[in-house]
Length: 83
Image (cartoon, rainbow, N blue to C red; front, side, top):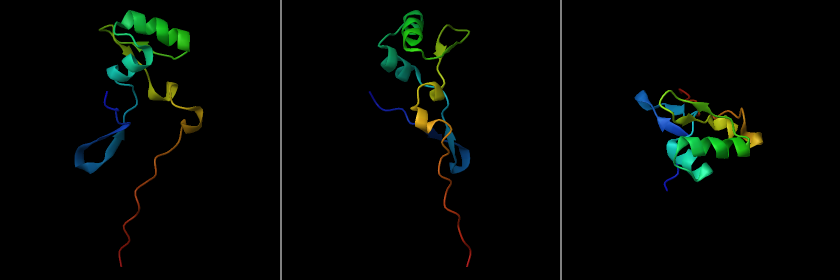
């Protein structure tokens, strides 16, 4: 399974943080395909989720990141100095 990036390209070359886990990542954590089974595993692991209207689940990335990385800021690009 390919690793899902935590950032994706955005218009004009900027990067936007992906704040929710992909369906593949949720499947990798739970080892389940059906949302009802995924809910049970997430609850057992103590991972918060939100149901979507279509029945699939939303898991915010900060609920599964290691504690030390919560709120960590991405390094800002180096400034371009003019001579």
